[in-house]
Length: 169
Image (cartoon, rainbow, N blue to C red; front, top):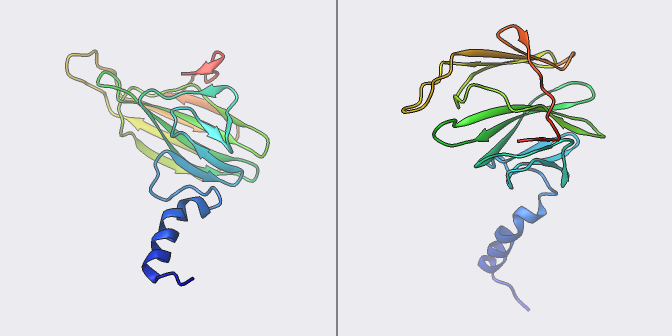
């Protein structure tokens, strides 16, 4: 049986996504590859290697996933929870290790484009301008700094709670 070059290339193109071994596609903003497996938020719930995080973290209208830094024993993800007109976005940082994936509660002031500064293995800073949506209550500018060695998140220099009550939503 002879297979034409066109038929073979069409077949290979069609099955290529399934041959990737679980690696995230470079242009898929809902997934990120960590050293410990694929982080996938495409169903508005974060899974790492097909398993829910502990606690579970759910998105609103969409969830973007990005690996932002790593340490010797953990990878760190920045999640963006896509919202609506009143609050377009909130953020979470997730620590992924060989045995767990632990998210923090959603944070931010609803602005969807904070300035970011990442010091690998040390800190993640998100600086939000004041958010002033039409017809909704505005929120002031805020700077959040996540200290990677201690796991502490601070808003404008003051520690904020990061634990989720049963589920992060």
